[in-house]
Figure 1 (tube, rainbow, N blue to C red):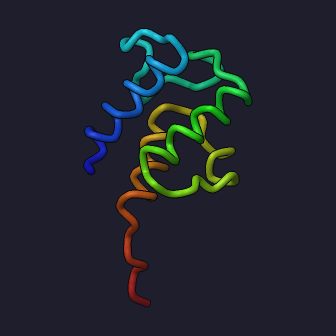
Figure 2: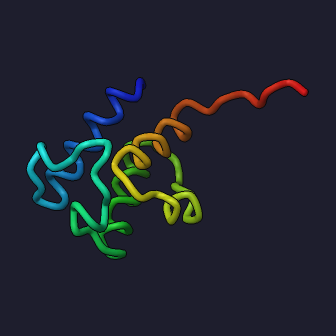
Length: 87
């Protein structure tokens, strides 16, 4: 899945889950400051992301997420793991 496809899924999820307008859910949107999400919303989002990816979302990684773009990047790393750079 590409990042634009992931963004579309994340936007749809956030619109449905948090009753946001699609225009609000941009990659630059800050989850707390712009979208008024709280820690309970983060738990709900983590559950939905696990359903989307089929993998458990690392709690430490989820705590580092600040924007919609960060959510997209997190899902991208779960779905499309990169091989480590050769040394």
